[in-house]
Length: 509
Ligand code: HEM
Image (cartoon, rainbow, N blue to C red; front, top):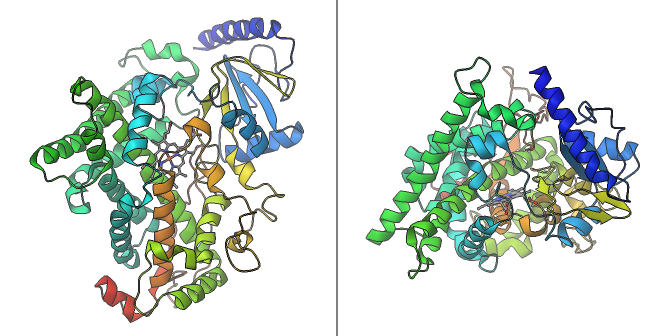
């Protein structure tokens, strides 16, 4: 194994440096590259890697830094300027994805929208999502979002594991948006879908499998000692296939019977070009739909988990939110989307939940498809580009005291949303042609959930055996991960009034 590593390191370094010699420009600053191993031991691997990257940028006094190892060239963009200049303004060069062996090749996710390079298949899948959930028609899913939120309100007070309850709820909700299956109908499909997403998140964790660093290992057969990753890849690929096929075929059957309810998959099936090959169009729809399901569920869980945890830690913010809700809503009223302009403090809380602990602090890696030069630096073709969303959303100039959870930063003196403060959604959902196509669904779902939870409940610490509140700990999954979410925590959802319970049809007090 060691020989293979050394051989790969030598060949990769030789190829990389022969290309560098042809450029008159230096690479961006970064840690000194050691012979052969280059930056192998300086590439952050564990814990909150976005903080490590931010620290490296501080150390090398640059918002763009370069690291390399084993033939991979990695560029970190640490400010909204570098991200805007490259991922937005030069989007045509910076919108591909780096290949992944475990997830992409062995498990088969590489053909789906989020992992696909920017080729025709990616464009076709992206078009399907854009047509089926167009940002120009944000109300299309409001009825589903409202009814899912009311389901969540009924579950929360009985939950002894908020993060788990959010996960089950979000999986069912996104199943409805994607395939038109209501929570009861979705139940049989959820275990497979949730297991497939979990396998994706394990395999997508940087450094989790050696085969991603040493691609030649993909040829080692499953029976060879130490090649257990092959068995996992096979089983996880089976989960992907099952998740992709089953719910899709239900929607298709229902469409044929005329009983399908609105969904992303139904809209895409209805928009197929009947003069062209239907089977190949269906294949594209399946891949787009399964990616929307994958992209939408755990992200919403993380954002809502962050909101709930921050309410628990900041009771004074809850009090302010309750005051505004009481002024706007009548007794027993549950919020609706049309209330949003009258509830700017709620909007500010949702924005702060996305900013304070961004769900995807490094967005998702982009890949550069052509050699480029930026501010006098050479950026080699094939580089993995990591936009540091966490740094952008913790920029002290934009967001003073960035580590504080402070919704009021988004409000002007008139108490309304201040357009001069940058909306965190401009970074939290990624960049350029790869920016999240589900952003408007995510924002609306987050807003209505925040408004409704705060209308119905006061989020309070759990009580010990003497009835004393237990001081909550705010702990976040330490990774390694590209995906930022709170660790499981305990809290109580204490009903605020009998009237809203009547509206929900439940009895809690
Ligand atoms: C709080 C919730 C969400 C967050 C924070 C989020 C964030 C992101 C980010 C950072 C990316 C990568 C952008 C880039 O590469 O620059 C992305 C991609 C994507 N998201 Fe979301 N997302 C959320 C919800 C959703 C929802 C609800 C859906 C679908 C209904 C969705 C579907 C997708 C898809 C399909 C992609 C892949 C786009 C591509 O590679 O071209 N996301 N999302």
